[in-house]
Length: 338
Image (cartoon, rainbow, N blue to C red; front, side):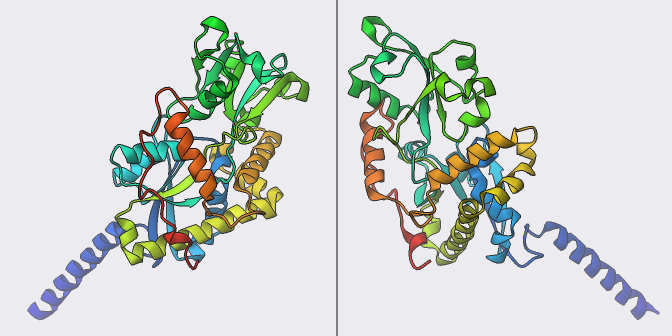
């Protein structure tokens, strides 16, 4: 009887231990898949469409990975989450990523998602020539986005002081409020945000003039993928990141190949609730154009675009984003023998 009692106790203790262990296993352990935390930047769901499509269609699961995406609030960079150990990978525009790196965060560029800059200036129809910016109020994004605008002003010979025929710069948020309420005559936005923030009445082709920095030769590389340099010395982590990039590329390729299906998937996302379907479609088309899946392998970094971006970061704004060209900020390790 005593032996039976002791065996029962041991079985009970083992069962409790197993239950506790099951509750404390990391996400993905039950499935046998590896886990990754990926920090995404602030923005509409269309900005991260390829990643979200890959998740919804099971491409990450096919690659043996469970992904947790975290969305950063406005003003906080995914690179901060990477540096704080709250993310394994981060998606961010190059100026913000490299400026954080210059301040000590271990962030290395490992893949470029957006091949074309999406940043642009939307102006009222009377500013139909760049020189007519003089004397007007212009809404500008700062905190890493401002270099192309200042570089353009320098090319045009216009001052960023209101006096002497210059422009008046207004710090702008990511919405269109300062524009729709006539506080500025031009607003900064991106090709994928514009359809979602501009009222339908303002979208008629004759209602505004668009200046795209990419077409002006002042495009700065935007959304790329960043990892900690210390992780790139670990072959197991590199393999995991390669599998993530390959699965994500399938998602971005799906956006290009079947935009209608991509739209249906994005419309079902909680963040897309209440957004106009036509505006979502236009936003997705803009994102797809920025990725350029028909022209380049997703993840490729164009050296000339990188050099142009760094030069603009060093010289474009009165307070440059970078004091010197970065060293060791880029690695092609994820793009090798993919």
